[in-house]
Length: 310
Image 1 (tube, one colour):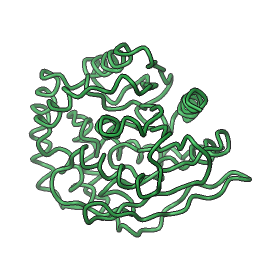
Image 2 (cartoon, rainbow, N blue to C red):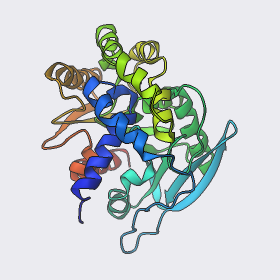
Image 3 (spheres, rainbow, N blue to C red):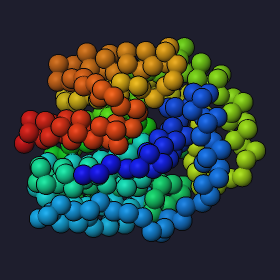
């Protein structure tokens, strides 16, 4: 298996940092907003690469579902339960998992589901502030319409950790287990850290509003809207103790500063320490983009969870 080129790795990393609201640290926003503004609008029906099936594994099929008037693209590789559902980080669509999907399908024999959140890939744009609760509703609608409402192993990267937290609280009996990949967890958003992030980024957000408005910049601003109150409320949310989880933290973390990186690691450990059915894995030699830098770590953790719940 060949990895992405350095240029593609850099673009993926910039997209993840630029469009995940949890990463509104000054360096991330100022470095990435210009790239997002230059990207231009991405049509929802634009051609894109899809996961290449391994020998003996069926290719993913596209299913368009509807929730509250907007359309969402889901991609399904057939297989048995538990179903593995993968949710990419901010600014990233289902193609983020293209290198991992065929391996998981072959190794586990499970049904594999990826999807484009609203505003990404082939899914519709939704005006107004982005909210993880709405994204969780989209995911629930898609899985329900696909008939997948039990024995799900949920894999959530970065910003998708917020979606997962609200989703699991709404549908704990759907989820057999989760793998949280450098995920945005409630423990990180203390009042002090949230206030510091908001204060650091006021100028960057104001500057971004003055730039040409593309699909990418609109999504970033939607995720930044009302950031403080949204994340203070998220900080009070608790992952259900009944749902087992593996948390994978990158060795670099999403943040360039020692303070933020340390708080990120501490939040991951605090989450794991809160229940006996959770454990922490460190992805050595990895940036925040663990699925790209260390797909073996993600695949191994998913295989472990599937084996445990099967």
